[in-house]
Length: 145
Image (cartoon, rainbow, N blue to C red):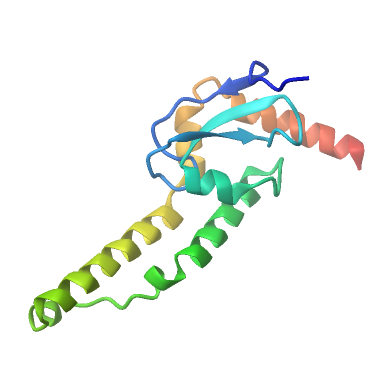
């Protein structure tokens, strides 16, 4: 049987539901490997890949997992020290440019990790489909326990 997304509700948005970057893909929530029903949510390629199939029915835990994996992947940028403009002015041009690149990477990583995923999800979920799905998933999970 070929898998199609006909049984999933698409939540339309321009930004990744996990980090706020431009969304180039869709995240299947719950993952396709878990069930055929669910949502299609906007995601960037990196977060979609990092989400994998862990925590298939708990969006909050999936978001935390993606954040932890982003922290690990961008650890070098996140550990970049903050330099003042005065300190940067004292450096030679090549060194200053390299540090500015790493400071920009750090700011982007920090912004992605701090993204309000739940708030954005609530904004793009105009028909309350996420809440309906979550209630259905929690009921089915409780029944299987």
